[in-house]
Length: 516
Ligand code: BG6
Image (cartoon, rainbow, N blue to C red; front, top):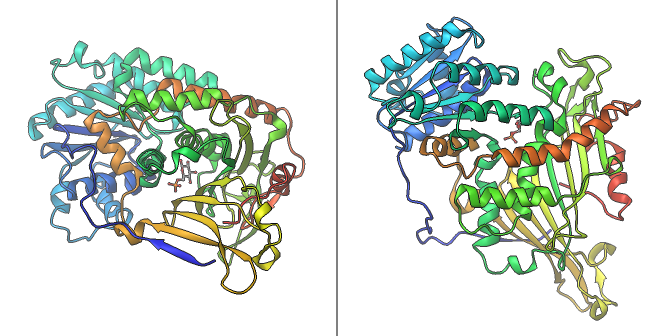
């Protein structure tokens, strides 16, 4: 399809918030021996250091069960180099690594918290970190409750009760936040007993992605889109979160999760809220989060007939044969866990009533692509009733595609007259590419979110109400699925685009998933 590129104009960007450096602090990562710490968190912290955005008085403490004191910092250094694409000779690297410490303890052993508290107090003296703490729960979710409770019992949580009243303590809680509505509420109760809501940062790394934040800029900082962003002009919305990877050795976790819990309840619902929300009155955390919750609460209960689940069987991905889900390590040979989920839902409010939102997410699909497409209604075509669409495809509606990843960008498809004596109309594209306009960015979502948490800005984190609102939508689906096992799993081959039932869901509305 012919494409017109849009490049960014060079003048200085309009900045909403000036860059700020957080207060001195220690980042304490529970579950530090896991992949997330090495591949994402430490590289993200080092990128902040490279950009001069970390305070001078700063340290990291990894906490986990195994005795890794001797190797942890070196191991993290390797993670920073490979996961963060960092030059091993970077002049800041060794000094940064010298501030990485390790504390071995069992998360359910009260004595371990006494010694952790002492260690942190010593590091405060050494680094001048003033009692400020950012705890990060990156453990398996079953440890969240214990850690939260023991931090409370050991007076490590609320500065007004335990500190000098001038220090701050915050806690980042990784997803999955709960397993269903009931467990999410229980976890919220537990954490709210020990921490005030403004100390709690429920993380969803999608919100740290530039392309996700840009949805709000695109919609609300431009005059031309908001007027057509509603049921009068939009036919339907599709959100795809496709991955070509499998479960990457995470069998035990994925068996208890599945695509709906792992990706739809959080990442996809966040994307949906940004597409559908009303403009907030400001970018303050409460204002943004309130608008998001309104969207989720306006979604009608999703009927099981509007849902599809799938599980991948063996297949070919990127030219190589791969095993099916049931053959993956530590997966039950008759597992019912879904590796693919698709939903049709409606938001019953003035802006969106009658506009279907189609969602699909899955592992081992045709390629890695997260994209939101807004398909507009066709205009009255009387004027062009005799015109032909190129290749017999008919005149196509306008489609706005927001490419969240990879190949980040936005494109708008519209019809144009093909030069020549006949009235033939072809679809063409205007395309904005982040890489072309702004250069390549190495930021993974974690950089922005860790920085915000250190600054105390919760705008891009989930609030209690939001987490419960999305679980309230997903939980009845999970129950319906649990009561109705599927007999023909696996129902899609790895490397394809999911089960035939997902196509049928669209077809029943006279539509087709967009080819990505
Ligand atoms: C995580 C899920 O939250 O998001 C993973 O647990 C998934 O299963 C990942 O692969 C996708 O993140 P990204 O940033 O690669 O799209």
